[in-house]
Image (cartoon, rainbow, N blue to C red; front, side, top):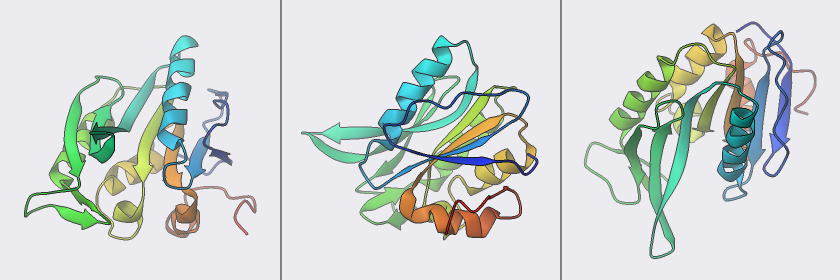
Length: 180
């Protein structure tokens, strides 16, 4: 992906309009539990209603007795899902905060999403400390999407991760003073 303009959006914002002649990078941000993924799901429905093809991965919260116990990762195009993040984990999982992350499942989901044929929009929900600090998780998928895809991209990340994102990807994205 050539350097291009970035638009930073917040949970609750309306879906961005795509210009297929100019791929864009949309960063959907907000604090933890602010509705970022809920907003992304609304956008996916709106884009589908406009006939746009979308690829990528979405993190679906898993609840038990009204408590969030983890996330399944779903390939947007195929609907296939991987059990990847739980608050109790196997010995070979990576721990971030209260969650144990099965990186093998993240890599499987990323590989499926990466093989998605051309699309109008590619989404990654979500990029965080695993990718930006530990250089694992969806990091390879993110690198691939930012370097190789010629479609628009939406990345979900916490607002607190924006500076880290720009530190890692400054050479790949065109930042016009968005981050002070």
